[in-house]
Image 1 (cartoon, rainbow, N blue to C red):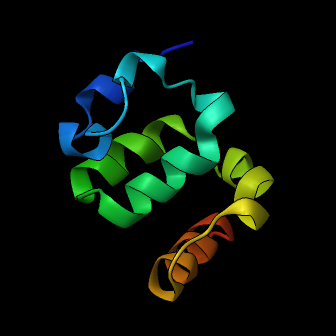
Image 2: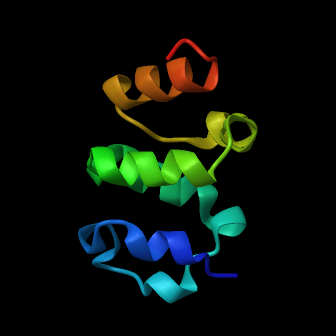
Length: 81
C-alpha cells in the first residue's frame, strides 16, 4: 500500500521507480538505504516521523550502508541521537 507521506519527499530519491509502487513495509530496507544515501535533512525528517525505531531495528541487519550512514542509523536506532 502506498503511503501519502512518501509523496512529500524529494522526487530525486525516486528517479528510477514509480513512487506509487512503494510499499513501506515491503520496501523498508530499500527505502531506508535510499533516504540515508541520497536524502536531505527534510527527507530524513519525513522518514523519521513515519518509520519507528522498532521498524528500523527489525531491518538493521539487512541494511547496506557506507560506514558514515551505518554509524548514524545505528546511533539513531539505539537512542544515542
